[in-house]
Image 1 (cartoon, rainbow, N blue to C red):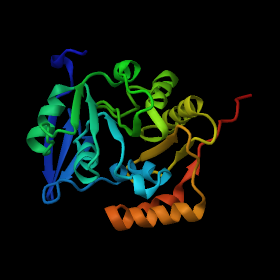
Image 2: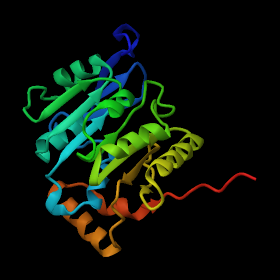
Image 3: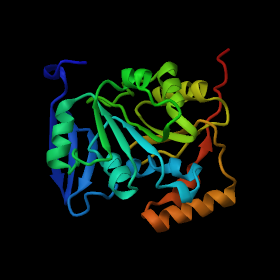
Image 4: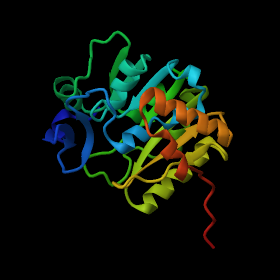
Length: 255
């Protein structure tokens, strides 16, 4: 594990009723609306819940959730306290955990929460959870926010192995176009054709990519039905996500 003294400094800012977490830079690593601490405030964080569209609505409150990268704990709190699901959060920086507990209402004493202070790359390779995770979130950026800090085929393949047969993951990809395309191809290599999709980018430049272990994309009418149900039950703008949803395919070889 990295020495805590060499980890980025964690700071917070507040504007218009929204508190945000930063890692020694202007980049926002996560946010919380003070009047609605369980609401998913940021657009891309909302889109990280898109994997639910690959699963039947009757199962949205079932199964283990895992977050690789805690951020401001928005997804962890949502899975734990809104969906009422057992949840594991993996975070390398202990300062992030302390700030999330003090300033972002992370309930570390919740009986369904397990907080692992670890490197996510090592954790996925060694944890004994093969085939047990139904919902996996990956959001691993450092203070420079140029590219994911863990982004190789072996890592994504280990993530795939954690998923149950109907398990689905989402990855936040943010940065230069070449970095995004490279990450997509690595996910495709780990999951296989017909198992990786991307949503449209947010105005801030985040693009959420979804990958499933075995589930295919539901038919259009079923997707619409699930999106409508997700909007009605969770208040998430899921129907809007469908407009830019498309499958990731293998890149053309360079001549």
